[in-house]
Image (cartoon, rainbow, N blue to C red):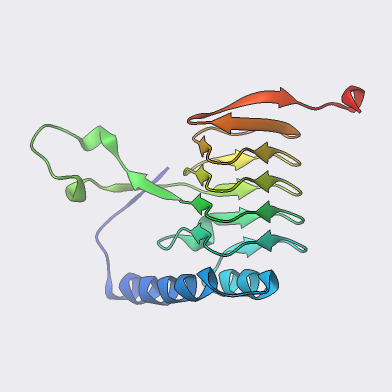
Length: 163
């Protein structure tokens, strides 16, 4: 993970731009327009990907999100690429004073992210994987697996023999 230092004027202006586009994307339809707006924000998105309304893609670091082709991201999903570094926690310090850690989030081709799921920094969702509704994903999900829960755990993995 990378550490983020104090904000500059450039980073503040970028934040205003990406946040404004994020707000617009939240209420747009059809999904092709929503996807186009997220691309303008710097999110890397493959072809035939569906991003529903009310999806939050990290405002601070949209360029750290990579979404493959044929991905389906449903209503209310949150994908973040930054978090506070708990290594700097001690009693009496305010949370706003902890530095951020940032890490890439990758959604491989043809995966499905269920309603209201949260994907944390540094996670890769494998090709064809399914994340169940309301899951909190803190670790990678292997290809062609189903992960559910909070924190998400793999409950099934499909192979060519399963078909």
